[in-house]
Each structure stands twice: as C-alpha cells, then as structure tokens.
Image (cartoon, rainbow, N blue to C red):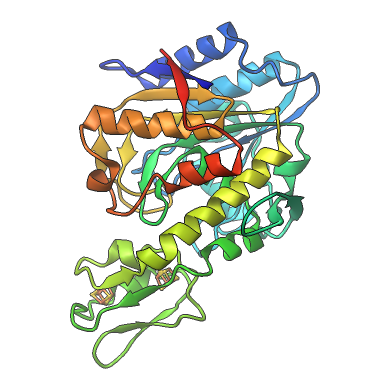
Length: 352
Ligand code: SF4
Ligand code: SF4
C-alpha cells in the first residue's frame, strides 16, 4: 500500500500558507530524497489557459523549486505544446503566456524550458509493456532529466473523467505525435436537430474543422483533433461524442503514455496533486465552474495512489460521485487500468 500525504485546506488558507505547509511537509519527511546533487529536475506543471481557471499557483512552484535547490540540484518548470492552436501551441507563445500567468523567474525562482522543443516535435521513444503499445513518444526533456516532480491540478475532464497526475503525465508529457496518437479516435458529431447555427463552435474550433452546412454546423473528421472545445462551447447540447466507443480507448492511451513517463523516471519521481479551485473542466478549457470546496494538497511517490486518494477525497467532500459533479462518463477506468499495468496502486494509506 502506498503512502499519500495530505495537507488539508483550512478555512481562509491562502495560497502562500498552503505552499509553506507543503514545503514543511516535504522537508520533514525528506520526500525529495531521490534528488541528487546536480540532477536536472523537470518540474512538470500546467500554466492554465486564463487567469480565471484553477491552475497550480506560482507560489507552490516557488516552494518546490526552493526544496530542489536545497538539494543542490537544478530545477526547471516544464510543459509541452498543445495540439490545438491558441496561446500554448508552441514554445515561445507558451512561455510568454506562462509569464503573463505569473510564472516568471521573479515569482518562481525557476526558468521555464519546454520539454518538447519549439514546436512540440522533440521526442524520445520509451519502451513499455502496454497492451496497446510497446513504446510511446514522450517529450525529450522529461526523459533526459534525472528527476521528475509532477505538480498537477485536480479537475473534471470531459473525456478522461478527471485529470490529475496520470493525465498530466500521459497527455501532458507526450510529444505532439504522442498526443495525436491519443486523440485520434475521439471525434465529435453535431446533431442537425439541435444545432441552432449559432456558429460558436466555428469560432472556438482550433483547427478550423467546422463549417456551416445548410441545416447545421458540420465537422470535417480529417481536420478534427478531438480536443472537445466544440462540445464545451455549444450551449444547445448539439455536439456529442460517442463516449462508449472512445472514453475507454482514450483513457487507455493516456495511461499507457503515463506508464512511459513512469518508466523513464522510475524511482526518481514524485507527484503533487492540488485540490483547490476544483473545476468541472480541465485547465485547458476557457471558463471555470467550481464543483467542490477546497480540499488541500496530496503528495506521493505513487501516481496511481495520489490520483485514487484525490478522487476519493473529492467525492467524500462533495458527497457526490464525480459523474454527478462533472461529466457522466466512467471515470475510474484510468486508475484501474494503471493498476492493471502495474505502475502504482489504487490502495493507499492517507497520512494527514
Ligand atoms: S455551437 Fe452548437 S448550436 Fe452553435 S453552431 Fe455549433 S453545434 Fe450548432
Ligand atoms: S473536437 Fe471540435 S473543436 Fe476540437 S478540433 Fe474537433 S471539431 Fe474542432
């Protein structure tokens, strides 16, 4: 059974206070003991899509960086390019965006270096014993760094059920080609009956994959990357995914890519899940709908256990199943499948 450390949010806990308590915990339990002097340490996080969403706050990254420097190692914050167009689709605009979000060196004490190069194409193929793949394509610096700290924000997710450590590893650490492989089967359809031709999806589609037909908007399956923006912005429920055929496959693909990250960083990684500002949608989506009160921060060396504990705490705190809080799709699958592949345990000991 894996240990999961839990720092509980208290009433009026500020970001600063919770970051200080995280630092105190990691120091006291020596949770960064795998980091060796002069290690290059990739601190994978998510800079959020706008200042409305609940991405990990820079002060938390700052404390993490201080702890890594105390080990005389070299930390850097890292991310990968998104598949869709927008302000995170290449290294330059992504870094500029991160600076605007408050992740500049002056706030975090760490530089930002993209793991997958300028355009998302710098990758290394990592061998896995998966059921779908025997190797996965990951962002090269995730593989080349000597230590890995994964700082994830727990959110609901319209295809994966929820996003936390496993999703941050599987999708967030994949190269562009790795991401394409994962998204290739999840394509939405538009119902002509429900579509009002309001054109919102045309405006938001990052790939210009939607055009206006005679009766409704129409998706070009060859251009669509399955990002789900159209589903999120349609106010008339006209956009549908065939979840039954895709959710399981997408989650399997995410988990197998996460397995690759786990293999590449074996015994040299730690997973920090942030359970504050918990939203219905992931931090890639515009907008923010809170679904649960703040819970705190969880830390573990086991990515499956930390996600399993996070999910349990969200459901316990809200008194509802995640499918009622976010999207009504099977959402425990990624945990079960990760456990089946053998890179973590859904059973955990929660240490408050
Ligand atoms: S947002 Fe929805 S209703 Fe509007 S055009 Fe697109 S599919 Fe139709
Ligand atoms: S999922 Fe929707 S928004 Fe995304 S690329 Fe496909 S059609 Fe465009």
